[in-house]
Image 1 (cartoon, rainbow, N blue to C red):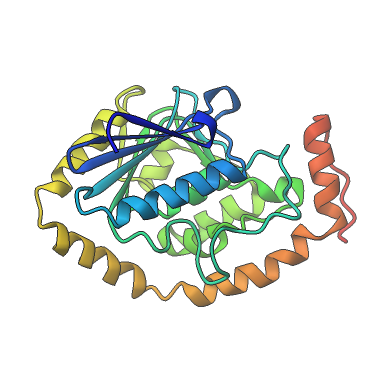
Image 2: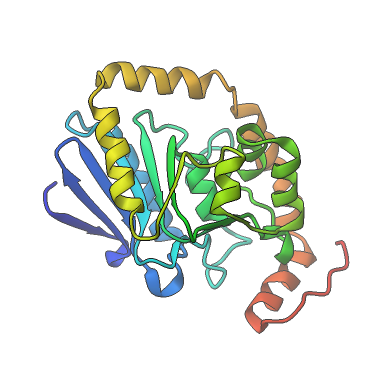
Length: 257
C-alpha cells in the first residue's frame, strides 16, 4: 500500500511512512463512533499490518480534535451484534506488533476498549476516558471488564466501570492508563516520536517482548467469562430501554430485567 488507503467508505484511513503506519478512525462528525464495517476494517487492517514485514509499529488515532473514538454507534444494531473475534479474544488480541494510541479527545466506551488493546498511549490534555455503558443498560463487552482492572488500580477501574463516570487526561496519566499527556494538537507528533523510538530497536525482539507480555497475562479465561455473562445484559429489557432513552435524550427507567 502507498499513499492513503480508504476503507469502510472512507471512514477508516491507512497511511504508511517507512516502518510506521497510521490508522485513523475518520468519522469526526460523529465523534468517530464506529459501526460494524468500521470495526471490521480496523481489526482486519491491523492484522494485515501485523503480517507485513515492512511495518514495525502502528499509530491508532481519530480524525479531528474532539474525539479519538466515542465507541459504538448506538444507532447501529447492538443486541444482535456478534464480535469479529472468538469468545476468548478481544480487540487486537492477535496483533503482535506494537500499537501506539494518539488520543485526541473523547475516548469512551468501545474507544477506550480499543486503547486497552494498545501498548503505548499518548493523550491530548483535553482527552477524557470512560466506559459509560452501564448508564444505558449495556456492559463494556469489548474487553473493558477484563483489561481495565488489570491495567490500573482496582478501585479506579471499578469507579469507571460501575458508575459510568469519565476521568480526565491528568488522572489517566496518574493512574497509569496513559504514558504521556501533551498539549492539544501535539498528540500525533508525540505518538510518532514514541513509534520512532520503538523502531530504533530490533523489530523481532520488540515483537517477541509484546507476545510474551500479552500471552503471560492469560486473558482468554476472562474474555470467555465476559463473553458468556455479558449476554445477560445485552439481551435484557433494560438494554432496550437504555437505547431508547439515549435516542430520546432522557433518563432511562430500569426494571432490572
